[in-house]
Length: 125
Image 1: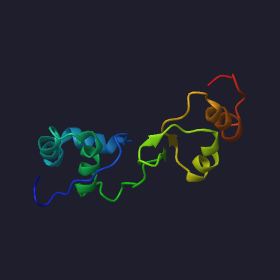
Image 2: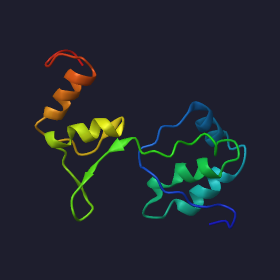
Image 3: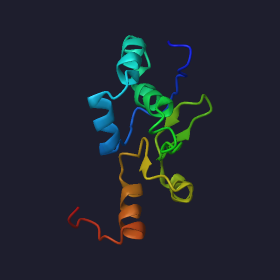
């Protein structure tokens, strides 16, 4: 890794603006290609490539929001666990736009539809 570039780790889920994607493709500087070369064979490249390009770019480093936007609840071993009805209030209070490991029963989804989106159950999505 170049000495003047620091690696940033984040989420594998990233939202990129059109201006950043154009910068990344057109390659006004060599940073995207350089980081791709250094990170392509690392086990966690998907969680730090775009974040590292953004945070080390003079043009975009002040546009980054350091928030995962995902709500997750963890078991005692620190691994994400499936969310249940008891997690609903904490999930809403968190303000995250996405939830990780939503239960298969769908009751959380039904509550979000009814209380947040004001959508009737079994209606169009």
